[in-house]
Length: 257
Image (tube, rainbow, N blue to C red):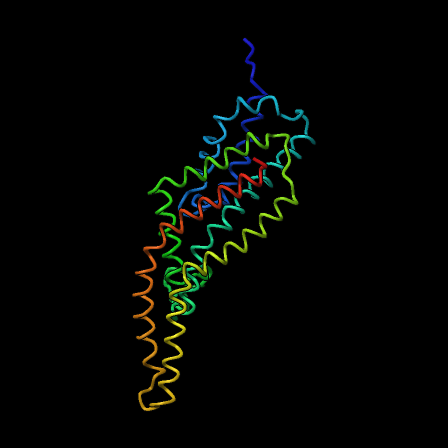
């Protein structure tokens, strides 16, 4: 008995899974280290499996050169779409890092016993905002919109399609600007309060040097940061929703849909 394998379907599944795997490695919320690599591999196959019937006719020729080129193209395409999504989602963590910087919490990670090398480079609120944003993504089902935006790339850019580099460059530039603008909008009010507190403490040290305003500034800024960050948390769900919409829109524009 001869066993015949559907080579076209298997090739389409392989190439589609490679694109999905490259996207999962880069794109939030799936790029977290808490998700094992084996699970990401299974998720990539699960994402690619439903779209295989529509990709069978777009499979390249089954020779070594064509397959290597096609695999490289899928890796680049998946990583580019993932990086575009990650760039916009970084606005939330960047807002937390700005709060850490102006509130004096940025040195906390240097004393983190779980990360003695300080390799992460993120302070208290940078991590907190990042974890909260990921939680909101899964709690509200917004991760499904991100996933759907990526799966649309198989329709707009099949296995033999190519992404416009000029369009991608334009989107990355705009995404970088929007990331900084969103980070300033989220953390801006609290940064303004902390800046005014620094000015007030500086004036106090000139008027009454005996009060030692420098030592007084640490607890005052900590109190202001904790209180302001608590109020700013009410803006985070709306900010995450806006970031998701912008990320999905940017991916759709990148694939020309």
